[in-house]
Image 1 (cartoon, rainbow, N blue to C red):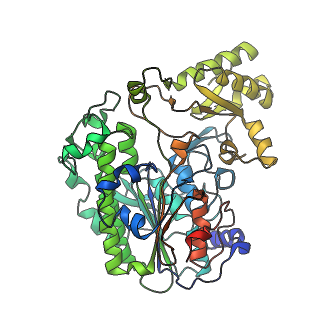
Image 2 (image 1 turned 120 degrees about the horizontal axis):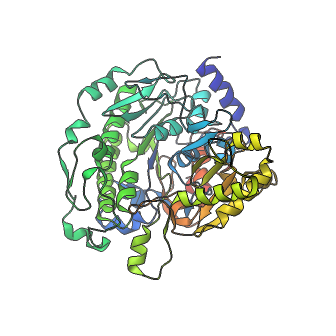
Image 3 (image 1 turned 90 degrees about the horizontal axis):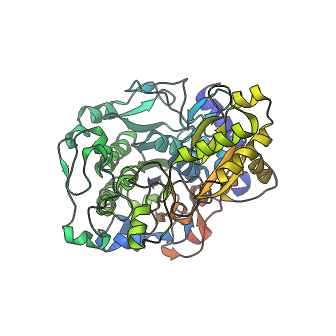
Length: 537
């Protein structure tokens, strides 16, 4: 069965006919789904005095916003977040439990977008596709409903961002490898001429050797505190203070400028592919990833995070101006959100309040606790040991060791769970068996929504608020079920959208059914969200 036919059958099967809406009076020609990696909800209020008129303020002044929007899962990472946005479902349905997990059947790590049956076009890097994503996206339902006449194109720096937004039936998903935009043979046999021409122009390498300076005068950043925070990372030789030299691709990634390149490429795609040019709706997905790398290095209280946010505001202004000139914003629906938030660096909290308890917990401490507990109960394990894979918050016991020692999985999980729970800084630890039972019982919690029976670990754990699972001494992270990682912006603008600020709770899983309603379609069949009817004209 061909990719198109197989995915079309699956899309029809998963479209929720019960949620189908009447074709709206104002049907958009183009839906633009924008995901800003690691954009915390509070950034919009903190940095709003410095925003221009038509970037974020397009939404805040003329569009709609939800002040209480959040993810309802616990694994607040890039791939799970992007998978929720246009499927409307969490990992318990869509299967994307993390950026990577352990494939017990194959005995190896699995990237969320890995696919060895395809190759990349423009790179020798490992193959990528959406095959690990269970269920349909809004784009899949749209392409199926229009018999392929609608176009779906996605662009990001990160492969997993572009791929999860695109779904199974996208015309193409584009991301960056080295200094070039690439795609996969899953989508098409070669790069289109317009993409090759863009790559030939050296859009990325032109930034090498340039410094990253502040956008505004230094005094505007004083509210963020000192520029030099000891817990900030000196990643890629960029230093902890402005200006930051951009010596090559790695430093480029950790600057604001990937956002500019992604926006430029997305605008080329709109023109070359004719997106939004007729009455058959199209979908454009854009993932802005620079904010995530900057946030990891410097933390949410940094001059750098403020600057990357302000620069993105100007980039959005240019993007929206382009869409207005080429299509007309009256014909476009734009939704903007983030894939997750982020927590502060523990050292910053303790600088403010020395008695504050948050710390960094080296995952190796958990490894040691589990290994000792298992050895005390069952003796030494055969190679490679009792633990097959551990990447917080997922811990997999070795199926080889369990089989060789004839230990019951549920019993071994209890031993490992108790060991994890005993480590200082751990808030809770749940076994895979527990999560499976809770799921079957219909429980609704962050860990349950993050669990899928075919992929999830033997032990799933979470740390206490503001603790980081990190063996280093600098930077920060996300991935918890606490509000600072779950709460993100949810902004809307365009055809059929009633302007206003909403205080009613909204889940990020509500985006997919709401977009489907605006398009006059049934929501993706696995969707767990609701139509945000208060948003619609």
